[in-house]
Length: 203
Image 1: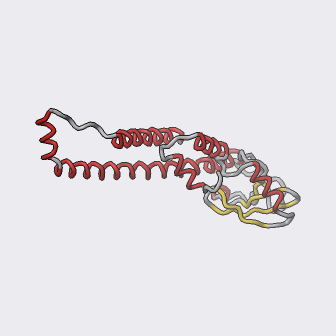
Image 2 (image 1 turned 45 degrees about the horizontal axis):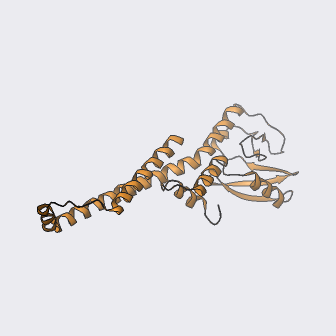
Image 3 (image 1 turned 90 degrees about the vertical axis):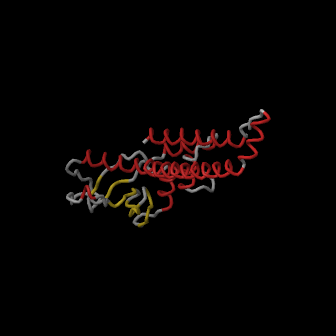
């Protein structure tokens, strides 16, 4: 991703422009929908010492991270587990969402509806990236509409100002040709619309 941040990459993906680099970035976001990579997980293991606390910003909120006996744990703060006193920590040992819940003593616990709750948390995490892309896509669509309205208003004004010139062209039998810039603008707008439809379909 180079020097680009997450938001910058997401904005590029909904801009309507296509290139090899953008395809690579799109594949990267798909493969790391949980906002954690294998390399990132390895770095967390390598950086943290046993018994050390840290703050991990992931899925748009801060997570309390703790390393105990060479195992990484995230403090469970989801409201879905508010009535599960035996669920305190969740292991962080993979990027695909597979994890184990443990109690305050780091012993494995089996909460009620554990499978269902874990699946809901995973789905919520994976939806974050696409929700953000949808918001950007809607904003881009609104910007396109405003740009189109401005262009229409500008075109109307220019038409009124050049009515006498057009009248002379009409009398001589010539017709104004479509400019390359207007053709390019139309093509670009069509490409952006296609990309917005693609983002909605993925969501």
